[in-house]
Image (spheres, rainbow, N blue to C red):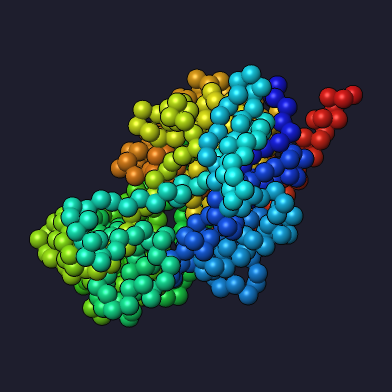
Length: 501
C-alpha cells in the first residue's frame, strides 16, 4: 500500500494501550510523544482512580504484556497499586519515560489538510502549547469519563451534608466511617466498594437496577475460574458473529455440549453463592453474562449478604433523595449519608470537535472503527484500547502491531465501503447480543481472543498450532505472542531493503 511518510506520532493516554503503543512505535523507529493528564502512568490503575479493594479480574499470568511478565512475588490477582507499579516498571524497562508528558491535558486536536498533520494543543503548569504530528493515536480509554446519574432532590441532600461520588473518586474507606452508605450499581466496582465499606460504615446498601451473574475466583473453592473461562474453549461457548471450525459444531449439532457446560457452571455458581437463599439469582441463563460485562465476584460480597452485613435492593433504583434519606422505586426508604456510584463511564473524546465525532461515530453514537482501531475515511488517525476485553493488554499489543504494520504499508485494507459494511454488521450484532450494552461499540467481551486472531490474520502472522491448541484447554498466555513484533519488524526491514534494490 502507498502510505504517507510518518516521523512522529502523538498518543493520548498513558494506560496500557498508550504505553504499549509507545513501545511498539519506538521499536519501529518513530518518534513518539505520550500525553497524560494524570501525574503518573496507569490509566484506571493510577492512584487518582483507584478505589479501596480494587484488584484485577484476571489472574496475573493472563493480564500481562507479552514481553514483560509480572514479578513472581505478586499475588494471583494483583491489587490496583501493584498493577500501576507494574506499568511504571514497564516504562522504565523499555526506556519510555522521556516520551511521556505527565500532568499534560490535551485540550484540542485539529487536522491540517494542507500539511496532512495534526495540530495538538495541550496545557500544563507552564501554560499552553501546540505541536504538529504526522499521526495521532487515541488511547484515552473507554473508562475515562465517570458517569454519575442525576437524582431528584440531590441538591437538598448535598446541602444537608450528604455526598455523591463515583467509585473511581472513592479512595479511602475512612470517608464513610459510621455513615449510612448507599452504593448504586451491581458491576464489579460497585460490589468491590460495597464489600470494602463493610465494618467501617454504619450500614451499606446496594441498589441494583439489574442483577447480573458473578463468577467466583474458584469454583467450589477449588477450581480456578481461569481454567474454564480464560481459555479458547471458554470463549467458544458463546456464539460469535461468524461461526467457524469447532465453534460451528458447538453451536450447531453440538449445542447440547456447550449448553450443558454453561448449565453446569450456572448450577455451581447458584449453589456456591446461595443465590436462591439471598434472592440474588438473576433468573436468566448464564449465557446472558456477556450482555454487559463478565464480572468476577468481589471477595466476601455474598458472604456479607448472607450474614446481613450488606443489603441488596434488587430490580429498583433511587427515585428521590432527601436529607439523610433515599426513596427507592420499590417504595422502600433507606437512610443514607454517602452515595457511591458504580455506574460506569461515558466513552468520549473531549479533544475532538463535534464535526470529527460525527465522522467517527454512527447515527447511534457508536464508535465506527474498523477492527476497533481505524476510523473509516479519517486520515492519519487510529484508536487503541477501544475494546473492553478479558485480555486488554494483549488486545492493545495486537492493536499497536496492527497500527504499526498499517503505517509501514504492510496491510491491504478493504475499500472504505467494505470497511463500513463490515463494521456496521459487527455493531448491529454487538447491540443485539448485549441488549444495547456494548459501550458504544467498544465491548468485545467475551470474544477477546477472536479479536486478537483477526488482527494477526490481517498481519499474516499467527502463533504455532501447538500453542493455539494449548489455549483451548489452558488459560491464554500472552508470552505465546511475544515474537510477533520482531517478526513484523524483520518483514518491514526486508520490504524496505527490497524497495531500495
